[in-house]
Length: 314
Image: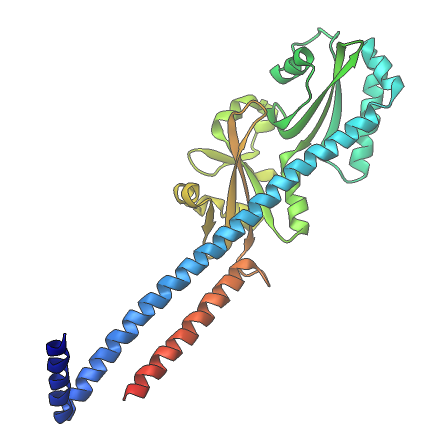
């Protein structure tokens, strides 16, 4: 160790005697030091940015989960009110379609009038054998359990809440409350976020011909977008997203948007599509801008310190 230190001191002494070589060596070492320092700084700031983006993903995921849970609570409250209508329940029990259809129409018109265009109710009588019931309705009738989830129906994709109506332990009907998955677009827009729903191509066979006609646009080999619901840049640029990368990170960042993807399974546990939400990276006060400003500031300050130290050596 002492020998190494002595040799180093001798080398430095020789370099100082040759001032040209001394300053050249200092210059080269300084340049190397700057590049090494910048590499360390950039690596650190990249890690910080990744943590910020991961935090953003967690925030958006929690927001979406909360909205789905709130949707179930909203439906539960609507169902509680409807179940207090004795006239309706009595009509459904005896399969009086004149009364039930009239009340259904009145309720749906009220929803529409109050701005809930995607929300509707329906009543299914167990005594009505005119047409076969879909699997979820049969499940509710047989199990006497309430079901909630996303379902692909012939006229679109909906949040669905199915409640068995019983008398003396016998189920005589089902109350169905549903709302389009696309309604989150308006809710999230009010909060400054973007939203769209991508449907898995394999589910197109569940839609009616009328529902499919010229309404869906192919995004990639796996998903389609109901373009009549979305006229935003967020939707029109979705096909530019690297879906293989987003499956790993659960988020994507490009020159326009920060996007978060949530896989959606239906009421039966089948993968049916993706909810995509996020924000414009130019949004004032947005997380992306905050992360960018933070990393730029850290980089600038650190670089300034490195250069100051190097200049001090001269």
